Image (cartoon, one colour):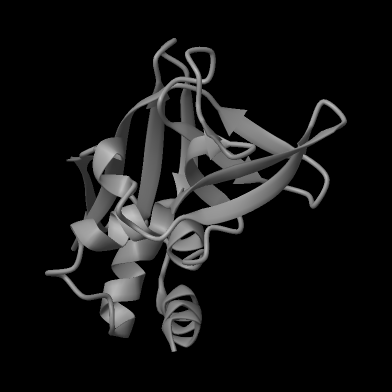
Length: 161
């Protein structure tokens, strides 16, 4: 059902024209509390890094964002159009950032593509990896890890006529 609503939202969404509409940006921080994630059902994701198969465990990024938005249930086409106009920014300890389309993350409820990892190969992440690591599984044989996640934010584009 969710995927059908998202597809309808994508079809109905229109690219804003800067002459006719006003665009503003709102940034909402998402809290990171990895200690509380251990009580949630863990998901495992197997990826290849430097020709080595690694199994990460953690929670799907979509679950963290959904728990943030439980009061604003995304169940209508209008809700999904709003999700299409959002981007997630992940900030690392070294200042690096990764941007992710919120719609793609929302569709990955099982964590098969976007995982907030707190474990690697059956053990908690060590000092080198940081306490939270974002795993973005691209191709089936490659992944793009983002180490030592320090902050998450959702950037919303608000289009007004």
